[in-house]
Image (cartoon, rainbow, N blue to C red):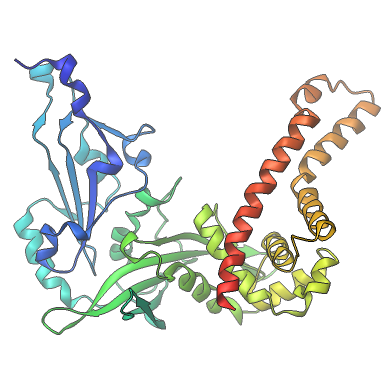
Amino acid sequence: MFDLEKELPNYVSEAVDAVEFKLVRDVSDLEDDRTTFHPVMAHQIFGENEKIFGYKDLKVKLYYTAGPLNIFLSIDYSHKLSFEEHNITPDDITSLISEKLPAGCYYTNIDEFCNVVRKADAFQPFGDKIVQFDVQTGDSGNERHFEIYFCDPTTPKFFSYHARFESFIMWYIDAASYIEQDDHRWLFFFCYEKYVNKDGKTCYASAGYGTVYQYYAYPEHVRPRISQLIVLPPFQKLGIGSRLIRTIYDHFESNKKVLDITVEDPSEDFQSIRNYIDAKLCKDLPAFQPEKLRGGFCKEMVTEAKAKAKINPLQCRRIYEILRLFHTNTNNDEEYRLYRLDVKKRLNMMYIVHKRNIEKAEKRGMDVTAAKLGMTPLTERLEQLQEEYNMLEHEYHRVIKKLKELN
């Protein structure tokens, strides 16, 4: 007899474990567990607790052809609860996922999908090739070949492909949203792996992409903002994210109408990559030499960073702090102390401004009781400040380690 109360925990699945992706190059990949990867988040599909209810031994297969990214969706389980038998309604997995997929753009029949896989070798990248590079992998030093292509809204027939690629962001980018395809200010940079299949044919696999929105800046300038950037898990740790960012920089470098380049709500990983690229670009500039860095942050740094790579002032300040730490002797107590004070002064600026505003308001005779109660006590604020600094220095050392490896 089925004991619902006892069995119920077996019908709750962690979505990030139950959902599995594949980038299918050959039909044989469908049965190869080595080609499987999982999402890092699922709350944008299944809710904040990222759980799927109503299925035992659940496996959600979301497979893509490696090049054109045609989609196959299948739900496998050993048993499913039902309203008729158990007075419980299970989650409608297909509806929840299909809402995030391009309309009518996925297969549910595995035989049909296999036929699509066999034809996918003919896929060719959209747009214009602007970069190609090789990456050595493994102890044997095997070379993998990659190409980056540029597209804009006038590129023929690529929007449906982009919509399929974009469906990944819900599983890998927090607070993700799809772009409006009818907006002409979007630009696209797609990275593909170029490989030879078992029949000796040259093929392309989709690896990652970045999107850029060109904001207007008075009076006749533009301020590009990197909006989405994703590298699919099978292609991570190969430097593709860095290549995409640098390619975007290079695209705008000679454009005199571009003021600077910004990033929309960067993740920690993205910010780390960006910090490394920008630090590498700035470290040989005159304004970022050790004697200048020890003198503190200055307008000369902003000017040179902007001229070199359209780096905005806020990001320039981060690069100054990274490169100053790079050249700081942390075994020299005074030198290291001066560096920490400089960074903490910047971190604490908003707290100091808020405190001064309260004091000014109080001098004018205003009631600031509520504002004072909302202020973090000084002792607690000092602890917070130290914690903020420690986290920041840890991240800066990650970047510095890469810079030293470069040297």
